[in-house]
Length: 300
Image (tube, rainbow, N blue to C red; front, side, top):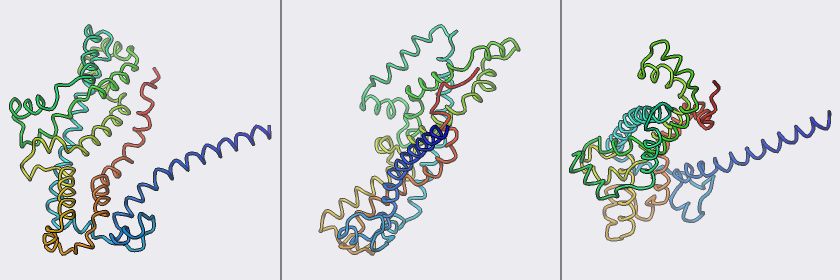
C-alpha cells in the first residue's frame, strides 16, 4: 500500500514538473516580447535580447502613440468588425451545423460533401476581388472586412460533429410537445452547444482581430483602416525610413535621433499592441474553451 502511494506521488510529481516546464517555455517568450518592447534600442544592439534589460525605454510606444486618435480609431474599427463578424458568423455556423447534423435531413451527405469540397478548392484571388467589388459593391465598406470571414467550412464541420452527438430523443420529445424547428434550435440545441459556440467564437474572434489582407485589398478610406493594417503600414514605413539615410530628416519631426530610433523594440511593441486585448479576452472563454476541446463528449 505504501509502495503504491509512493508511486502515485512520484507520478503526480513528474506530471506536474512536465506541465510546469511547458508553462515556463510558453511564458518566457511572451515575457521576452514585452520586455524588449520596453528596452532601449542601443541596449538591444549591444547586449542582445535579455529578460532583464540594462536600460528601459518607452520610445517605441511613444512612436506609435504619437497620434493616439489614429490608433484609437483603428482599434474601434477592429473591435466593431470583430464583434459583429463573430456574432453573425456564430449564427450562420450553428444553423448550418445543426441542419447537417440532423439525420432526417435528406440531403445531409450531399450538403456535407459540398461544404467539405470548398475546403479543398476556391476561385482564387481575382474572382474574389471581382465579386467583392463589382458584384457585391463592398469596396470601402465595413462589410468588406466582415463578409469574407462569415462562414468557414472547417468550423461548420466541427459544429456539425458536436451537434450530431446530441441525443435525437431530445429533439423527438420536443416535437411531441409541439415545438417547431426554430424553437428546438434556440431553446434546446444552442444551450447544449455552449462549449462549441464559445470555442469556435474565440477562434473566429481571433481571425477577425488578426485579419489585415482583406483591408489591404478593399479599404482606401483611412477612417475604416483596422488596427492590424495600420500597424503593418506603420512597420513598412518605419523600415523604409530607417533603411534610407536620405530620409533621416523625416525623423526630426518625430523628435527621435536617427541613431536612437527604436526600430527593433518597435517591432515587439507592435506585437504587444495588436495581441494585448486578445490576452485579456481569453480568460473569460477559458472554462468554455476547455469543454470545447472535448467536443462530442455529451451524455444523453
